[in-house]
Image (cartoon, rainbow, N blue to C red):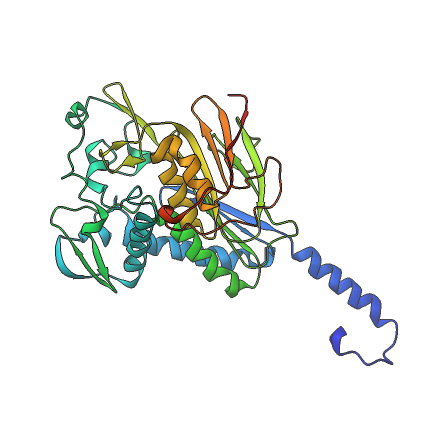
Length: 365
């Protein structure tokens, strides 16, 4: 008989057994984690109940495989690589959702995050999975001057009506700036109710959480040098805790390569088709979803110093580290490990008002 259904006159001897069972259940409900590689990046899955890890991992692996088949620019057989210019293309529900997220990010950032940069990325050498790219190579003809606007047609030229996609001839979509964050949100939201516990999904540092958070929230180490959370931090870092939503970091220090002595990175300014000026080494943002956090962190890299007022105006807690190692925080990003409970969704920056001045501190480089 379960303890909750025991009669009031049941023998006292039953109580220790019930307590032991409760302790056993509590012991089994420990956090558990798994790490592997997918989508060309590090995947980390954490659940608040170790008994749920196997099922959660199976769901996440299936989700990421489906996203890869639909959205990868580096697979000749992916759905996105089969897209052609013109009106009336029918796309799968999964790809339609991914494109809708990318177009929303473009609108929220006034075009800073633009999914039509695929051809420009290929032109500067990012034409395959980053792990297989040569880190050094000869000069590129495109580096002789700015890539023309024809290379970056602009997100407004892409129309999505339900599952019907229209875009100009020659456009190559790249969802690298949004797809991982969206995939983290999507999977966390699907897995948590299915397995019945708290879930954290991290895809290359794009983090989404769902379900009941651990006591004190999900503790996350934000650092300027990419590394495993199981290893000691290398360089400056911050400890924060979130209970819901997402957190994302964009960096000009990761995914770098050289062509003819020019140091390039993967975050393009769509106005030039060239890598954004590396004002910031890293930008970390917390928001209501990982997709919104990532859109804001990517746009902040492109905006340079103007990002401080923009992020503050949106009320998005953020940590920005410039190339000299100076750390700026805005909109309530904590100096010490504490909750980021007031993360907000991005809104139209044209309607935003400043809410908090940037703070800065010197850290060891």
